[in-house]
Structures are given as C-alpha cells and as structure tokens.
Amino acid sequence: MSADEPTVLITVRLPRGARLRDAMDRLELDRDEVDVEYGLVPVDPDDGLYALRVTRAAAVRAGQRPDAEGPFADPRIEPFGPPEPREDD
Amino acid sequence: MRVLIQLRPSPDVVAAVADPATATPAAADVAARLPGVALDEGYTPVALPRPVPTGRDADPLSMDQELDFSLAASDATVLVRGEISDRDFGARLSLLSSARSDVVGVFSDPVIETCPTCGGDPPVGDWRDVGHLLKVADLRAEGLDGDGVPLAVLDTGINAKHVTQVMGEQIKIDAKNSWNPTGVKGKPGEFKVDHGTMCAFDAMIAAPKASVIDIPLLRSQRRGGSALDGLLSDAVAAFAHLRTVLDALPQDSKRLVVSNSWGSFSPAWDFPVGQPGNYSDNAAHPFNVAVASLERAGADVLFAAGNCGRDCRDGRCAYPDRPIVGANSHPSVLSIGGVDVRNERVGYSSQGPGRLSRRKPDICAYTHFSGSKAFGDGEPDSGTSAACPVAAGVVAAIRTKWPVSKLSPAQLRTFIQRTADDRADAGFDFDYGFGILDVMGVLQALQRRAKRVS
Image 1 (cartoon, each protein chain N blue to C red):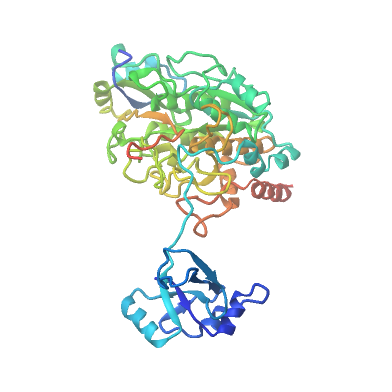
Image 2 (cartoon, rainbow over the protein chains, first blue to last red):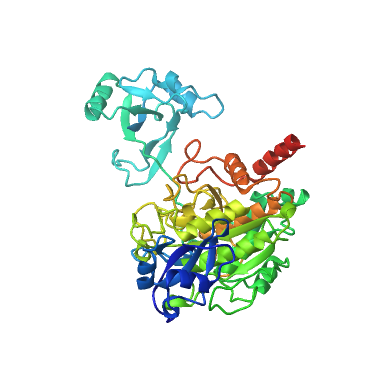
C-alpha cells in the first residue's frame, strides 16, 4: 500500500503471540490493503486485542466480521506548544 | 449590583477615616443604615480627597484643569461598599438619594481581573523558580530524584546535548528502551532541538536522574503532514512498545512514567461523535483502550490538557467546546493544565469538562517560564506542553522510592489530586482541576501512608 494512502485502524481478537499473517488470514486481507510496516500492534495484550492500519475499504469489509471491529479514526496529532496566536489576534 | 457609595459624613468622622494614625471606624459606624443597601461591613471605609482647582476663577466643576486634592475634614468624602438589588435598581437609587442627604454618589463596582499569561508573552520566571516551587531541594533530601525510573517522553525526539548544556546536568537517555515509529529515522537523544527537547528538559527539573526513553512520535512521515505531527496509530504502537518495557521490569521495582504533550486539535480529523469509530468521545477507540491497558499494567500516564483555554486559545483549536478530548481526558491519566510561577492559570490552558471524563483537567503545573531555550533565547517553555513534563518529573521523582508494588498509579493520582493547592471555586473546578500540584502535600501524604503500612 502507498505511504500516502489514507488509513484507518481496525481491531481483531487473536491469541497472545499472534502475528500479522494470522490477522490477515483471519480477516481475509490482502497485502496491498494493510500497512505491513506498521504490523500487528497489541492494544490490550491481556485481552488478546490487536490493531492494524488498513485502507478504509478494507476496514469497512473487515469490520463486518464478528471477531473484528472498526473502522476507527486515525486522527492527526500535534504538539501542544508553543501556543500559536489566532489569526484574528 | 455591587456598588461604591460616596458619603459626606460629619467632619469628625471624615477626619477619623482619613487619619492613618487612628483606627478607621467600621463601615456600619460611618454609613449607619442605608435604605435598600446590603452594606459590606468587611470593607474598611476609604477617605476620598476633594479635587480643588488651583487657579483663581477656575471652573469648580471641571476635572480637565490643574487640580489639588484635599483630604481636609471639611472637604473629603468617604467611600463604603455594598450591594443593591438588581430588581427596580433605578427606583432604589432615587430613594436612597432622597432618604439620605449625605449620599454624594453611587458608582458601579465592577469585577476586575488580572490579564492572564498568553501565547507570545515573555517568560514569567525561570526553571529555577519552578524548581523552588516544586520543592526540588526537599525531594532530593528525601532521595527522590528519579534515579532508575524510566520516564518516556513521547514527542518530537530529544537533543540530549542541548538539555545537558542548558541545565548543566547530564541527561540519561535510555537508548535500549527508546523506540521510533515506522519510517522515522534518527537515534535516541540525537534529534533536532525542538518541542521534545523542551519536554525532556522540563521533566528533568524534578527528576534529573530519571532514565529518559526517547520516542519521537510526532516525526511521523506519513500522509504528507507537517514536519512536526503524527498519527494516532503511531501512539497506539508506541504504547504497545512501552507495555513490553514495563512487563520486562522486575515486579518489585516496576514503574514507568509516560509524558504526552500532544493531542488532536480538530474534529475534522476524527469520525463524528456518536460513530463507533470516533476517537474524541469514545473510550472504546483502540488508543483509549491502549492507555487504560498500560495504566492497569502499572504505568503513570500524563497528558497535557491542551492550549484551547477561552482567554487566548491556540489558533489551531477547532473544537467548538470541551476541547480536552480523547486520551487527554481519559479517567486513567492525569490531565495537566498550566499555571505560571505566580500561581495564575495561563490563559491558553484548556478548561473542562473533558469528553471521556468530565472532571478534567486533574491538576495544574508550571509553564511559560524561561527554561530549555529550545525555541531560542528569551522564548519561554510554554503551553500545557511544558506543564505536563514538569508534573511527570515530579511523578518520576516520587517513583524513585515508591514503585507500583507500594503505590498503584490510581493511588498516586488520588494523592496528587487530594493534596493539590485548591484554587478558584472550593474543591474541583474546570479551570484548575483539583488545584496546583503541591509537592510537599504529596510527600506528607506518602509519609503518613508509609507509617500506616509499617
């Protein structure tokens, strides 16, 4: 998948120690739909909850499966400082 | 309406009020009963001099000429303070003047406030003042300097050389546990001097010996963002990495402090509130779950409250209300607002209620002081961006001798909230939270706990 393609997050429940390949197989995702560099990220390892960064279309499809949830927003984040003046100031 | 009432009592009363050598008579003795006025008996009457024109044949009613001011008993008047009901205010004023011939005038007494510190203002105090207010000497005397405590700074990366040079104290970068998001190049402690360097410096004020984990979260290269931003998914990955760091620590010395001086400024980057995938208002978003999971595992997580305070909010703020959003308002974190070293809330510090948890910010810590010089000489360490690592440094200092096995993150948060120096309204308020971080209060509470436990 292209580095410039907008992405969203999905989550999936898998056994502890799961790998990206396991998640892609479970959710029937292709390599070009998944940010493989980002990989499979444990969100709550105690609860077997993992996240993937995928294309929006793939997220909508995967999110319909009972063992997955999403799409979730992946908003931009920025430092809180120094405070920038408002344009009308 | 609150009013000032100008009276002309008898000359002996005026003389008693005006004479600094004698005890000033009480308001009730000067004004007696003023019909329709709730007199403020706690307000000491003030003598007001009479303006007297200096020139012969001057206009006795003009203030626009050379004047002398006479406090002579026959000239001066006296001010008292009170309140007149807003209902039929005009009629009450007329009746007061007709009932009391000694009432010279009634004037409004509006609320006056200081101007809060805002973005672009020069520094207020310096980092040594902050150290003094944080009782760093007392912390060190107790052996609480952060030695051996992992302190993660999730930001733009740290320049260790700059921090060491400006502070005069060697920063300890924990290179082994530092981590870069996908695509971010650079070595721990060797990033360009910027926001992350400021955060590391400010954390070191109270915890100079902490082991700083450098996570350049805001240098993500994806989606053509600006040079200094990132994606929330990178924060999910960073928290997953920190979980492995925490899990690798021995149980009896487990502790990890996580300082986050960043957030999301605009709902335009999020899914709408109410959609299941929304971040700002949704505890089930993967990042909010990751925050709860890391805290439950034993991490102290701190987030800046943000710079969207009503007095002078950051130009990037796009939430129309309740700007403390997502993890910055998570119930399992300490949300940190900002005050200057005069203990006044800075005007840009975001006010609650928060979106995930209403009672935000939790507390305030110091900001807008001359510190790291990361943005140049004369530029302050500012924003709640600086307040957050200042507070994180105190938490790291405390953790030197208080690992999670002795004090859980939730317990430490409660101590910090309960001992905060209460400001504004009594108890919690949406400007200061529970108040300003009070290090001595926390230390005394911990000492009491240690006695109880032993």
